[in-house]
Image 1 (cartoon, helix red, strand yellow):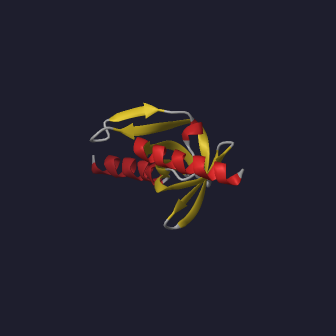
Image 2 (tube, rainbow, N blue to C red):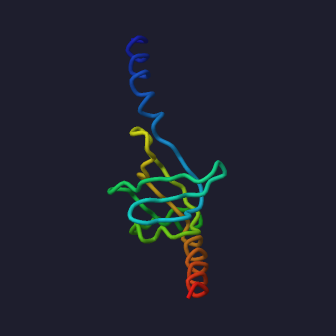
Image 3 (cartoon, one colour):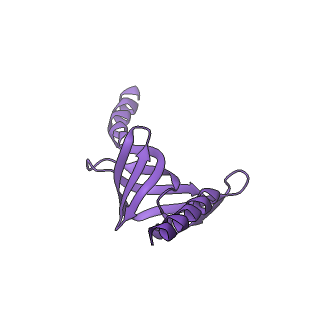
Length: 116
């Protein structure tokens, strides 16, 4: 019985090691490619075609709304679940706080106006 459990643990461990959580701020988001600024430096990620992107709100973060990839704007703080099994980071799940989106959108609007 112990041998079976050990074999199962050895089989599952490499799969679990491939998942990675990244917390940072979006620098760029174009054509399914993201650059996220983290304390360890910029991370380049590919957005999975079936990635789950959600806006989180409510007092305990209990309200989660699925949003399109266009919601991933520069300046937005995010938490990303990424898969590294192919050697390249692929974002499978992204969450951000709704109030952070509002702030990032206001900054983006000011930056776009200044650039004109």
